[in-house]
Every structure is written in C-alpha cells, then in structure tokens.
Image (cartoon, rainbow, N blue to C red; front, side):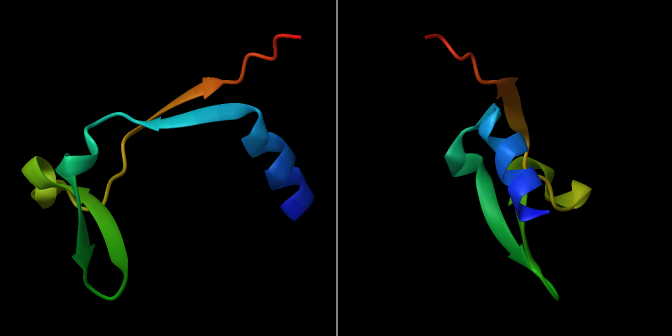
Length: 56
C-alpha cells in the first residue's frame, strides 16, 4: 500500500489554494486545519492539485 501511495503522490504537484496566513489550527479531539474566515464550515485544507509534467 505504501509503495502504491508513493508512486501516485509523486505524479502530482500540491499547493495551497489560499494564502498560508489564512489557515489556522483548530483543536477538538483531533487538530485540524481551518480557514480563518470560514471557521463555521469546519476542517478544510483547500489545495490545487496538478499532474507533474515530466519534461526530459
């Protein structure tokens, strides 16, 4: 399972869809990321996911 995840994750680029300053920690039973302006929506981590372009 780890090898499959490693292979899949390497094929994508991940970046935050909001500025890093907008993300804060919210602790209950588990610590989760939330957006400052949308705390009422619960835990979220908006990301932009793109396939890696392999140029050789």
